[in-house]
Length: 410
Image 1: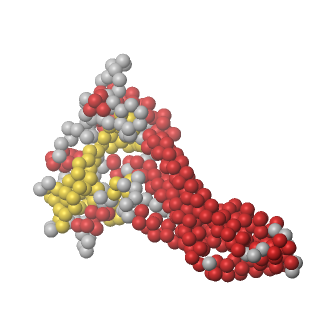
Image 2: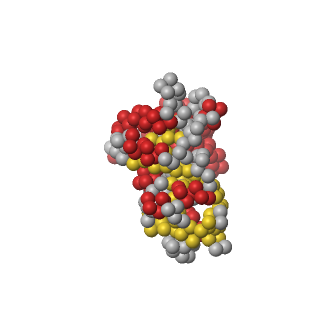
Image 3: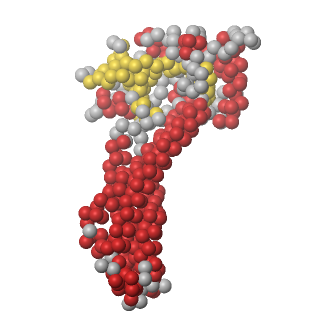
């Protein structure tokens, strides 16, 4: 054991000495590994970020919520655009009907959205998603308030000019003051801020969920039209209840819409599971492309390491002969060159991780990415594996050389 430890220590010293003596060659070789590790870690950070963002987004939607709309979510399979366009619009009154016809449901809400500009004094925020909602939408969407409160059923019935704003809007319009009880103008109408939502982040890494505001749907009707764009949400106690209650919702909607038994549904049932199905197929494609590209980059880097190690073994043939002549074992020679190969790969890996941290931060400005310690550990393990795999053949050649032939080499 003591000899093994001494061999590892000496082999490491020799490896660093050899790399320092051939700095340009070492840098060029390390660059191949850096590219490979940056590819690996970037792929992992993006896929991890997408996974985390997707799970958070599904929680926002609610895994125990069924959404009813004129249009279906997603474009998978046959998308009958003309059929969907000609469907009748939904109505806000359907929410009350569903409460009576679907006893399994714990809550029902109606909502509609438009983009609008919000103003306060000289400040304004453009393209805000303004939602006209029934008060139950706050419970179904699991919204948390950093300050203030939601509006009530009475305020909705009276079309009160009250508004609940997202965190981004509060920061943009009221950077130095408390937004509560301040006035915001939407299309010339004045609304009093009664609540501010906690920060939610983005939906699927793209849509800013903090750049939205909510007003009573009856007040929404006085500014915009609610003749189209209504969406209903039916919440159940659990995800299992949702799967069973979905058929109750379909039956209730058919009854509300007065469809004959032979008529097709003129509405769409949407739920988080539909996103999950499309996401799985998309993720498989992303993973497949990512693994191929990163595998190719690491293979090219590994070939570069192997080539340099063959050159290194050739240049130090006489040194190998001298070491064997004074008693060095074949496994010690093998270990020495393997350590050198691993050191090259680890240096490239560490540099690659540093580059990846910067790239991850840059990606987060536009999309989603997440790097944790497991990704960095995997990068180190991959570097070690590449060093052993591609350094073995040159190291084995050095270990099998005979002292006499090595000493004769010029």
